[in-house]
Amino acid sequence: MGGKPKKRLTCGALFSGIGGFCFGFEKAGFETAWAVDIDKDATATYAENFSDTKVVQDDIRKINKSKPTLDPVTLLHAGFPCQSFSPAGNRKGFEDERGMLFFEIVDLIKSWGEKKPKILVFENSAFLLHGEGGLWFNRIQFEIQRLGYWFNVENAVIIDTKKHAGLPQSRERLFMVAIDMDFMDYNPFTGVSSATESIDLEDILRLGEEDEIYYMPEDNRYTKTISAEMRQHNDIRLFQLRRMQLRLQPPGHCPTLTANMGMGGHNVPFVMDNERLRKLTEWECLSLQGFDSSSFRWADIAHTAKYRLIGNAVSPMISEKVATTIEKILGSNEHVFA
Image 1 (tube, rainbow, N blue to C red):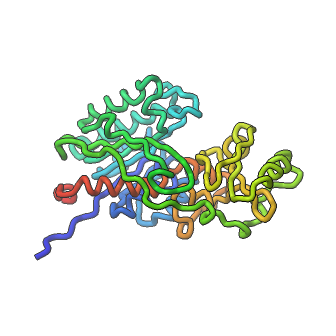
Image 2 (image 1 turned 90 degrees about the vertical axis):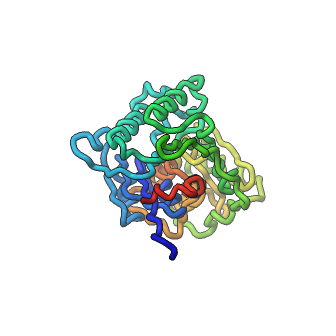
Image 3 (image 1 turned 180 degrees about the vertical axis):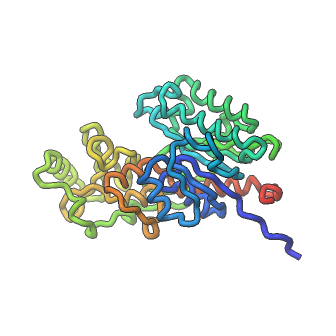
């Protein structure tokens, strides 16, 4: 008569941050069993938004070492640290302690033995694909294949928030999807569809509504310089302070948001609001990353921490596209839900 309903596919989240991966996968119909991050501000905020998920604040280097902490899941996703693989970082790759954390993921997968995830989804800097003459990616490909997964360069796709989600922010990230060789005969993941609609920057900005704390002091050394430049333009646009250089953005465009955003120095987005200069709010930045800022809940953490966490986050609109594509790939593989 209809048969047994499918169980929801269970996911585990490493380097979960504020839940960018999880929001997208859950919206696509997947269920998050657990989430891990070392950052207490991240896990506190994550717990505010995912009350039914087991949240573990711990170092991945300690997870499952002395005793089992994380149960096996069908799908594992991880936005592992990108600083050592980014063109804006130190480019040390696996010579950097943060880059070495990738191998902790490998060890965790090994610890599950035959119960290892059927699907892996990793996210990192787009530069990882070609950095060090391709050696970084080759090492990751080798390790994933050695674990028993279908994975090669065709399954590593650069996805952009503007092109693929229609957001006004351009943000290219590398998504790598691997599939267990015992589960499927090949890996059909080669990308996601482009956006069919665009979101206007003006629809995200909350002009005329913001608290005084976001406005730049009139005596700040940059206020007069930036304000004078911005007043020369009649349209709504953002200004970026990048390595102490002022960069006017094209109309309707937001520069890539990073973890340094809002903390001075690199990548501070400003807007003219009622003839006064202010930085973008954390709510505006959440929306520019593809989060639903109307339902998102912050833990009681500092403003600077919020900006940092947003800059580190995976876009939920992009992760939903990846999840939806994977759900279609699963198709007739009913036994994955058993």
